[in-house]
Length: 273
Image (cartoon, rainbow, N blue to C red; front, side, top):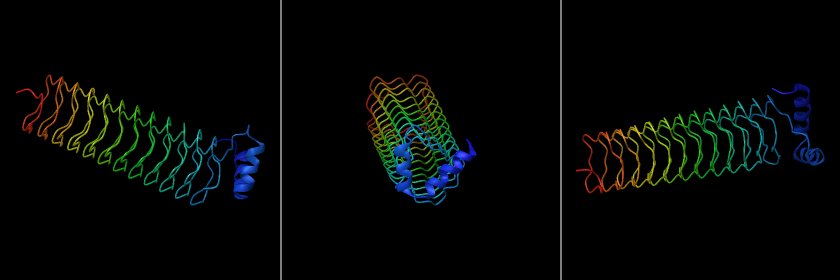
Protein backbone atom coordinates (compact mmCIF):
# COMPACT_ATOMS: atom_id res chain seq x y z
CA UNK A 1 0.00 0.00 0.00
CA UNK A 2 2.99 2.32 0.35
CA UNK A 3 3.57 5.06 2.90
CA UNK A 4 0.10 6.30 3.97
CA UNK A 5 1.37 9.76 4.98
CA UNK A 6 3.08 10.36 1.65
CA UNK A 7 0.06 8.94 -0.21
CA UNK A 8 -2.17 11.39 1.67
CA UNK A 9 0.14 14.28 0.83
CA UNK A 10 0.16 13.41 -2.84
CA UNK A 11 -3.63 12.95 -2.88
CA UNK A 12 -4.07 16.42 -1.38
CA UNK A 13 -1.76 17.78 -4.09
CA UNK A 14 -3.83 16.04 -6.76
CA UNK A 15 -6.97 17.71 -5.43
CA UNK A 16 -5.34 21.11 -5.96
CA UNK A 17 -5.70 20.62 -9.70
CA UNK A 18 -3.70 19.77 -12.81
CA UNK A 19 -1.63 22.96 -12.82
CA UNK A 20 -0.39 22.55 -9.25
CA UNK A 21 0.23 18.85 -9.89
CA UNK A 22 2.20 19.58 -13.05
CA UNK A 23 4.33 22.26 -11.40
CA UNK A 24 5.13 19.97 -8.47
CA UNK A 25 6.13 17.17 -10.84
CA UNK A 26 8.35 19.52 -12.83
CA UNK A 27 10.23 20.47 -9.67
CA UNK A 28 10.36 16.97 -8.16
CA UNK A 29 11.22 14.76 -11.11
CA UNK A 30 13.11 12.33 -8.84
CA UNK A 31 10.00 11.56 -6.76
CA UNK A 32 7.59 8.83 -7.78
CA UNK A 33 4.07 10.00 -6.82
CA UNK A 34 2.38 7.69 -4.33
CA UNK A 35 -1.38 7.34 -4.69
CA UNK A 36 -1.51 3.70 -3.62
CA UNK A 37 -4.86 2.72 -2.15
CA UNK A 38 -6.39 6.16 -2.83
CA UNK A 39 -10.02 6.63 -3.82
CA UNK A 40 -10.07 8.31 -7.23
CA UNK A 41 -13.34 6.82 -8.41
CA UNK A 42 -15.26 8.83 -11.04
CA UNK A 43 -12.61 11.57 -11.07
CA UNK A 44 -11.72 13.46 -14.25
CA UNK A 45 -7.95 12.98 -14.50
CA UNK A 46 -7.46 13.79 -18.19
CA UNK A 47 -5.11 16.72 -17.54
CA UNK A 48 -2.79 14.90 -15.10
CA UNK A 49 0.57 13.30 -15.82
CA UNK A 50 0.44 9.99 -13.96
CA UNK A 51 3.55 8.39 -15.42
CA UNK A 52 5.78 6.57 -12.91
CA UNK A 53 2.97 6.82 -10.34
CA UNK A 54 2.19 4.19 -7.71
CA UNK A 55 -1.54 3.51 -7.96
CA UNK A 56 -1.40 0.05 -6.43
CA UNK A 57 -4.87 -1.03 -5.22
CA UNK A 58 -6.27 2.43 -6.00
CA UNK A 59 -9.97 2.85 -6.74
CA UNK A 60 -10.33 4.33 -10.22
CA UNK A 61 -13.75 2.91 -11.02
CA UNK A 62 -15.47 4.94 -13.74
CA UNK A 63 -12.63 7.48 -13.68
CA UNK A 64 -11.84 9.45 -16.85
CA UNK A 65 -8.20 8.93 -17.83
CA UNK A 66 -8.62 9.50 -21.56
CA UNK A 67 -5.25 10.24 -23.17
CA UNK A 68 -3.38 10.21 -19.85
CA UNK A 69 0.30 9.24 -19.67
CA UNK A 70 0.49 6.16 -17.40
CA UNK A 71 3.80 4.82 -18.67
CA UNK A 72 5.79 2.83 -16.09
CA UNK A 73 3.03 3.25 -13.51
CA UNK A 74 1.96 0.61 -10.98
CA UNK A 75 -1.72 -0.28 -11.00
CA UNK A 76 -1.46 -3.76 -9.51
CA UNK A 77 -4.81 -4.79 -8.05
CA UNK A 78 -6.38 -1.44 -8.95
CA UNK A 79 -10.12 -1.12 -9.59
CA UNK A 80 -10.61 0.31 -13.08
CA UNK A 81 -14.04 -1.16 -13.78
CA UNK A 82 -15.77 0.91 -16.49
CA UNK A 83 -12.90 3.40 -16.49
CA UNK A 84 -12.33 5.59 -19.56
CA UNK A 85 -8.78 4.82 -20.76
CA UNK A 86 -9.10 5.61 -24.45
CA UNK A 87 -5.79 6.55 -26.06
CA UNK A 88 -3.69 6.28 -22.89
CA UNK A 89 0.06 5.94 -23.12
CA UNK A 90 0.90 3.03 -20.87
CA UNK A 91 4.28 1.76 -22.02
CA UNK A 92 5.57 -0.87 -19.54
CA UNK A 93 2.52 -0.30 -17.34
CA UNK A 94 1.83 -2.81 -14.56
CA UNK A 95 -1.85 -3.81 -14.47
CA UNK A 96 -1.22 -7.18 -12.81
CA UNK A 97 -4.42 -8.53 -11.19
CA UNK A 98 -6.24 -5.26 -11.89
CA UNK A 99 -10.02 -5.13 -12.46
CA UNK A 100 -10.70 -3.70 -15.92
CA UNK A 101 -14.10 -5.17 -16.73
CA UNK A 102 -15.96 -3.03 -19.28
CA UNK A 103 -13.11 -0.50 -19.32
CA UNK A 104 -12.57 1.46 -22.53
CA UNK A 105 -8.99 0.98 -23.78
CA UNK A 106 -9.49 1.75 -27.45
CA UNK A 107 -6.28 2.93 -29.14
CA UNK A 108 -4.33 2.52 -25.88
CA UNK A 109 -0.57 2.02 -26.16
CA UNK A 110 0.32 -0.66 -23.62
CA UNK A 111 3.39 -2.05 -25.37
CA UNK A 112 5.47 -4.22 -23.05
CA UNK A 113 2.95 -3.97 -20.21
CA UNK A 114 2.19 -6.54 -17.52
CA UNK A 115 -1.50 -7.49 -17.56
CA UNK A 116 -1.06 -10.90 -16.02
CA UNK A 117 -4.21 -12.07 -14.25
CA UNK A 118 -6.17 -8.94 -15.17
CA UNK A 119 -9.94 -9.09 -15.54
CA UNK A 120 -10.85 -7.58 -18.91
CA UNK A 121 -14.32 -9.07 -19.33
CA UNK A 122 -16.25 -7.12 -21.99
CA UNK A 123 -13.48 -4.52 -22.14
CA UNK A 124 -13.05 -2.40 -25.29
CA UNK A 125 -9.54 -2.93 -26.70
CA UNK A 126 -10.05 -2.21 -30.38
CA UNK A 127 -6.82 -1.08 -32.07
CA UNK A 128 -4.94 -1.27 -28.76
CA UNK A 129 -1.17 -1.78 -28.94
CA UNK A 130 -0.46 -4.83 -26.77
CA UNK A 131 2.76 -5.88 -28.49
CA UNK A 132 4.92 -7.93 -26.16
CA UNK A 133 2.45 -7.67 -23.28
CA UNK A 134 2.10 -10.30 -20.58
CA UNK A 135 -1.54 -11.44 -20.47
CA UNK A 136 -1.01 -14.83 -18.88
CA UNK A 137 -4.14 -16.05 -17.05
CA UNK A 138 -6.00 -12.87 -18.01
CA UNK A 139 -9.80 -13.04 -18.26
CA UNK A 140 -10.64 -11.42 -21.60
CA UNK A 141 -14.00 -13.04 -22.26
CA UNK A 142 -16.32 -11.21 -24.66
CA UNK A 143 -13.82 -8.37 -25.06
CA UNK A 144 -13.74 -6.24 -28.21
CA UNK A 145 -10.22 -6.54 -29.66
CA UNK A 146 -10.78 -5.83 -33.34
CA UNK A 147 -7.51 -4.87 -35.08
CA UNK A 148 -5.62 -5.05 -31.76
CA UNK A 149 -1.86 -5.65 -32.00
CA UNK A 150 -0.83 -8.62 -29.88
CA UNK A 151 2.38 -9.62 -31.62
CA UNK A 152 4.64 -11.63 -29.30
CA UNK A 153 2.14 -11.24 -26.44
CA UNK A 154 1.96 -13.98 -23.81
CA UNK A 155 -1.68 -15.12 -23.68
CA UNK A 156 -0.97 -18.54 -22.24
CA UNK A 157 -3.88 -19.90 -20.16
CA UNK A 158 -5.88 -16.75 -20.96
CA UNK A 159 -9.69 -16.85 -21.15
CA UNK A 160 -10.79 -15.47 -24.53
CA UNK A 161 -14.20 -17.09 -25.00
CA UNK A 162 -16.38 -15.18 -27.48
CA UNK A 163 -13.78 -12.42 -27.78
CA UNK A 164 -13.83 -10.34 -30.95
CA UNK A 165 -10.35 -10.61 -32.51
CA UNK A 166 -11.35 -9.77 -36.08
CA UNK A 167 -8.31 -8.59 -38.07
CA UNK A 168 -6.17 -8.74 -34.91
CA UNK A 169 -2.42 -9.33 -35.21
CA UNK A 170 -1.24 -12.23 -33.03
CA UNK A 171 1.95 -13.05 -34.90
CA UNK A 172 4.32 -15.08 -32.67
CA UNK A 173 1.92 -14.80 -29.73
CA UNK A 174 1.94 -17.47 -27.04
CA UNK A 175 -1.57 -18.94 -26.76
CA UNK A 176 -0.62 -22.22 -25.10
CA UNK A 177 -3.66 -23.67 -23.30
CA UNK A 178 -5.64 -20.50 -24.07
CA UNK A 179 -9.42 -20.79 -24.28
CA UNK A 180 -10.84 -19.29 -27.47
CA UNK A 181 -14.18 -21.12 -27.69
CA UNK A 182 -16.56 -19.20 -29.90
CA UNK A 183 -14.02 -16.45 -30.56
CA UNK A 184 -14.20 -14.35 -33.73
CA UNK A 185 -10.88 -14.37 -35.60
CA UNK A 186 -11.89 -13.40 -39.12
CA UNK A 187 -8.78 -12.35 -41.03
CA UNK A 188 -6.61 -12.50 -37.91
CA UNK A 189 -2.85 -13.05 -38.29
CA UNK A 190 -1.67 -15.88 -36.03
CA UNK A 191 1.37 -16.80 -38.09
CA UNK A 192 4.14 -18.47 -36.05
CA UNK A 193 1.94 -18.36 -32.93
CA UNK A 194 2.06 -21.09 -30.30
CA UNK A 195 -1.42 -22.62 -29.95
CA UNK A 196 -0.38 -25.88 -28.37
CA UNK A 197 -3.36 -27.50 -26.59
CA UNK A 198 -5.46 -24.36 -27.10
CA UNK A 199 -9.25 -24.76 -26.93
CA UNK A 200 -10.75 -23.15 -30.03
CA UNK A 201 -13.97 -25.09 -30.52
CA UNK A 202 -16.71 -23.33 -32.52
CA UNK A 203 -14.41 -20.43 -33.37
CA UNK A 204 -14.98 -18.32 -36.50
CA UNK A 205 -11.60 -18.13 -38.22
CA UNK A 206 -12.45 -17.50 -41.88
CA UNK A 207 -9.45 -16.14 -43.82
CA UNK A 208 -7.20 -16.30 -40.75
CA UNK A 209 -3.46 -16.76 -41.30
CA UNK A 210 -2.18 -19.73 -39.29
CA UNK A 211 1.00 -20.25 -41.27
CA UNK A 212 3.81 -22.01 -39.37
CA UNK A 213 1.83 -22.22 -36.12
CA UNK A 214 2.62 -24.79 -33.46
CA UNK A 215 -0.84 -26.14 -32.65
CA UNK A 216 -0.14 -29.65 -31.48
CA UNK A 217 -3.21 -30.99 -29.67
CA UNK A 218 -5.36 -27.96 -30.49
CA UNK A 219 -9.15 -28.34 -30.34
CA UNK A 220 -10.71 -26.72 -33.42
CA UNK A 221 -13.84 -28.87 -33.45
CA UNK A 222 -16.89 -27.43 -35.21
CA UNK A 223 -15.00 -24.25 -36.14
CA UNK A 224 -15.36 -22.40 -39.43
CA UNK A 225 -11.87 -22.56 -40.96
CA UNK A 226 -12.78 -21.65 -44.51
CA UNK A 227 -9.92 -20.13 -46.50
CA UNK A 228 -7.53 -20.46 -43.55
CA UNK A 229 -3.84 -20.67 -44.39
CA UNK A 230 -2.33 -23.67 -42.56
CA UNK A 231 0.87 -23.74 -44.61
CA UNK A 232 3.72 -25.26 -42.59
CA UNK A 233 1.53 -25.60 -39.49
CA UNK A 234 2.00 -28.30 -36.86
CA UNK A 235 -1.46 -29.80 -36.29
CA UNK A 236 -0.26 -33.07 -34.84
CA UNK A 237 -3.08 -34.62 -32.81
CA UNK A 238 -5.43 -31.71 -33.57
CA UNK A 239 -9.19 -32.11 -33.20
CA UNK A 240 -10.75 -31.01 -36.50
CA UNK A 241 -14.03 -32.83 -35.98
CA UNK A 242 -16.93 -31.16 -37.77
CA UNK A 243 -14.83 -28.24 -39.02
CA UNK A 244 -15.57 -26.35 -42.19
CA UNK A 245 -12.37 -26.32 -44.24
CA UNK A 246 -13.68 -24.97 -47.53
CA UNK A 247 -10.70 -23.79 -49.63
CA UNK A 248 -8.29 -23.99 -46.68
CA UNK A 249 -4.59 -24.43 -47.51
CA UNK A 250 -2.67 -27.35 -45.99
CA UNK A 251 0.62 -27.23 -47.89
CA UNK A 252 3.47 -28.81 -45.87
CA UNK A 253 1.13 -29.13 -42.87
CA UNK A 254 1.72 -31.82 -40.24
CA UNK A 255 -1.57 -33.65 -39.58
CA UNK A 256 -0.22 -36.78 -37.90
CA UNK A 257 -2.86 -38.19 -35.57
CA UNK A 258 -5.33 -35.42 -36.34
CA UNK A 259 -9.05 -36.19 -36.18
CA UNK A 260 -11.21 -34.79 -38.98
CA UNK A 261 -14.36 -36.88 -38.69
CA UNK A 262 -17.37 -35.07 -40.20
CA UNK A 263 -15.11 -32.26 -41.45
CA UNK A 264 -16.07 -30.52 -44.69
CA UNK A 265 -12.85 -30.03 -46.65
CA UNK A 266 -14.42 -29.15 -50.01
CA UNK A 267 -11.77 -27.64 -52.32
CA UNK A 268 -9.19 -27.71 -49.51
CA UNK A 269 -5.66 -27.72 -50.92
CA UNK A 270 -3.01 -30.11 -49.67
CA UNK A 271 -5.41 -31.99 -47.38
CA UNK A 272 -4.73 -35.75 -47.30
CA UNK A 273 -7.15 -37.89 -49.26
